[in-house]
Image 1 (cartoon, rainbow, N blue to C red):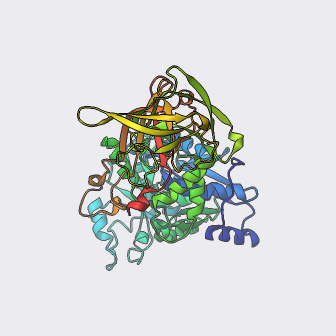
Image 2: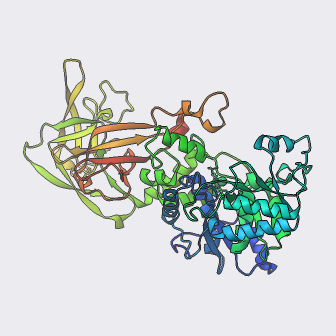
Length: 559
Ligand code: ATP
Ligand code: MG
């Protein structure tokens, strides 16, 4: 049911449980689900859950994974998010087939189950204020107290619930609660809410409902309705599992899904809570949900991350019950590994300065051959034009350079990638002493970057022919935050730690001629990193490239 190119995932404790369930014939068919709430865009944390659930569906015979929109909170949910979530799941390489569901598809059934609980005297309508409900709940050291409304008759409860449903009350006036135990040590079992009043229309069900089910009730019942066998969720739901089981036990649902918790993905130097992502987007701190600095899947896609790299990352971090924070470099290494094998090379000068070859004929030009991948001959060759005036990287020239500077300095010889050996003769400076031009002579016997006499050259630098170059804007990205755990900052607002250098815009970059026809894929700009066209701002006559990732981890050095 999923893309056959998606590699199978390594085993983990959840797969061990599934193996045992198949072995013992508890289940013939495994059914998982990915249940996003459509209240924002997906982020890399969701990718962990998507890869886990969909890869199980892909690896077990006849298994399926449902995509279920958990749309029980109409105030915060939008169809824009539903569409974006579908696009992201598909982009990651997964397919829900015809198993697309919404919790709102089950509103009638959920309501019938709630009525059943009332009839079994296991649910009641409470009319305490929100404030009192909180006070009556007690806390970790003190038991809660019964609400004075707890002993309403079944008839009265049914009547009130019906009126809640049809919109006869204001929000907050009443609440349907499970009747469990106000003294339970697990606070989730102290008569949790089942339905709250929301006089709000819903994108799928319109104005039919004035009450909407709470997550803890809706989730387990929806899982049961869909015949989910293994309901995988993050660790913070561990304390909710007794409630998950309680509802299904009281309702005697035909299917009994099993909730299994795993630790959520946390990454350093970023944030993943949807509430905070909303703040960054709405406060204009970033350029929308798909800002290339965000850990959202749409942002990562725009930045140039590949689905294969994200799947590889998810498989490397594994699935356990241990809470931890993964270093961004782990994600970036998966990315580099994928890009290194798939991206063709190009020469691009980001901070240009002119290199003039004084002994090269004025109006001569020639085509040299660039290899597209040093280790993969299948990726072929391309033409790279060469002429008298080139651009090189400003940092590739240094006056009075130390011995180990294997680039240009007066009297030193370097190899121009794919081209010739050149020896620096002198520079031309402006009145302030800034270098304007670097001058050199070339050795015509070294065409293709090889010398006949076998003399050794340590340094190779990249260049582009000035008259053939294409100008582009290049956006260099860095960590969005300056500290590893901005979300756990207590004293100060996490937004104070936004990295002012998280985006640096370079204009007037000079790229080799072939980049005029750059496609929508990643390129390695030699010695610089991996880059791709920006899907939003780039156009044929104004190219904009994003740096996906540098060639090496510069953060490891800084630390
Ligand atoms: P957030 O806490 O970021 O707002 P959420 O958990 O409220 O996210 P949902 O839309 O409810 O977002 O999540 C859908 C699924 O993705 C859930 O099963 C949830 O457990 C899982 N998920 C969300 N964040 C992570 C994460 N960081 N790591 C692993 N799984 C996650
Ligand atoms: Mg949630």
